[in-house]
Amino acid sequence: MNDNTPMPATRIYADFNGLVDGPRNPQRLAVVLDTWGSLRDLANAGLILREGLPLIAVDWSDDEEDLEGHGTAQYDHDAQWWVIEFDELGVRYVPAGDRSLVNEFLCVQCRLPIRGLSSSAICKPGQPCPYCGTSVLGPFMPPPAP
Ligand SMILES: [Zn+2]
Image 1 (tube, helix red, strand yellow):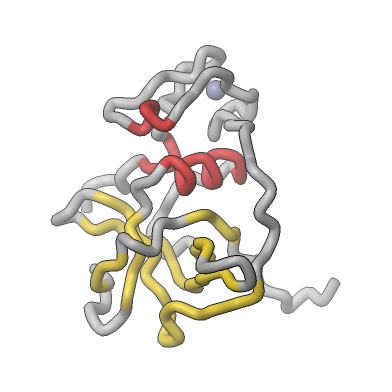
Image 2 (tube, rainbow, N blue to C red):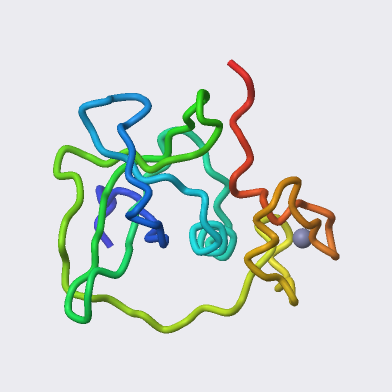
């Protein structure tokens, strides 16, 4: 592998019905990360959101195409949620990727699979991991106060 290859951005699900203006650059579009699918994909990738983290948001468009947005994680302090603020290309249409269903949810901290979670786990303050006590909402933790 070429040493100059940048760290590949992680692809996570995001709900493209939740598009907003970028909190850092209002000229850009952003997608809100407040859904179960986004949380699960981040936890399974072992990622806790931080400002500037490169991410690719993906959603299904139709049978042949996906919606995709490349950007970075940004925390909106007014709305108190994380978004992916897209680059200048905004939302792109790409050929449909892997759509196999993910049922596993790995703890973002100890990486053990947490069973019996459902989308209601997204309610604050979030269910604790039965092994290490980390909230299942760990990936959505707000950044430290400036
Ligand atoms: Zn854990």
